[in-house]
Length: 601
Image 1 (spheres, rainbow, N blue to C red):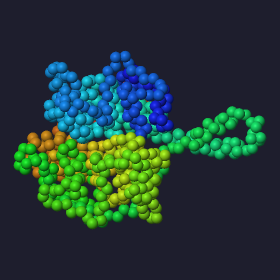
Image 2 (spheres, rainbow, N blue to C red):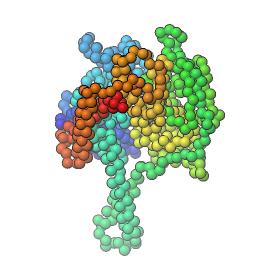
Image 3 (tube, rainbow, N blue to C red):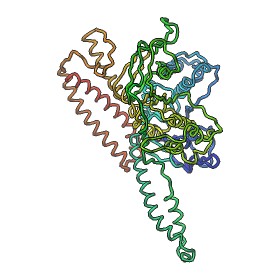
Image 4 (cartoon, rainbow, N blue to C red):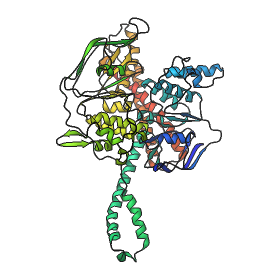
């Protein structure tokens, strides 16, 4: 494996705040590396250092000679007067490069290549920046939150793009599906140290828990011994004057271990004092569109849409950008008027709205004051109360950070603080519009737990597939131009159903040319006219069962080898490349087996 980047003993501080100290890691050719850390611990700073835009205190960074590095920043800046195409790269009239640029930009839903950059939204500019870094075809890609501002279709395209060939990349992302499918190595920046896990995100979760358990056991052992040694240290100096000095020095080292504070939470926050009546909200045949009605420019959001929201329902809303997801939310909250019909809200409903545009704080205010201005505590019921400080600590603001000023917070920490302001109002109906953007993975896990236990109603608009699978029990799928489908399941189940429906639709079209009516039932993919498997299909099904068993056995062997600790670096690299391909092959063959089994049943 050819080393592309070698980082040795790197340290970085801002005043008294140390982000990381004496960290070392390397990235070799073909490795796809994901960087994970809590908000405010230095992820984006580390990427900026590697790209040469930020300095560091000590250590060394060595790139392979003549290595071409491409960097996607979290908030890219462009000349507002240049066109989209010119912003991508200096094509110098080469027709092949222009054609490639058009293909990539079209996949990212940027279609007007002559539009001025200053006319694009922040999300569109981020997509142009992503196209730019992909088109320059660097040897090493450094990507800071590449899935932000991408819809699900774009994210899945980007997954496939990055997994093809022998690309080398280092990226920060909160999208755990993306990490799992793209990355073969995970770097975790925690407690000012870097830990390396040679596997995908699922492997990282398993090994990280082992590390935490071992650390906790080490601290527990140190605490037991510390109590004994503390007694000895507290005796009169004369009583230990002739004792070996090494024991005194060992005591102070032991004290450091014993007093380590593990950030792992030991409880789940459960509110039982949230009441919501049986009447939630009802959309009574509402319609909404923008542009001149009946013209080609008209954008239809909803058309005669009826929906009666149930008590304790947890709904996810998915769809491509521009299909009306956020507009629907704003109509529900009364921020955007409907054209026709009406929305009736229950009297007991108390909304808590987390929006994409809601980050507005007094920069000179302290974090704790932002929360106590709303309330001093949240009533959890059964005589239990959660103070403002406890809520902040639950969402990983340490007591020291709570007395920091807002201007010192990172972008992710500000999003987290905004989330706390929403929850502190003790709503019974949470409406969350893209809540996962810029939040670290640990905070996402906390939020998932909170929403799973939340005794009220929840609507989530998100492109985070992992988050949606954990939280929601059904989906509204916005397909555009007022076409909305209700799907009784999570996102993964929806994608599986969609693939099966597409396959069965092609089969059905050969049998009947009757156009289907708009059925939203999950069972609508089933063919009414059952047929029997042909001899060839039966043989195919038998072979698929053998292939799936063999692939599962190979996957098990690779995972055991990766966890074993005796595999060489070259073998690990080969296995890490094979694992995502193997998962894709398993998915493909399993899906085909399901299609055939549907016919057989």
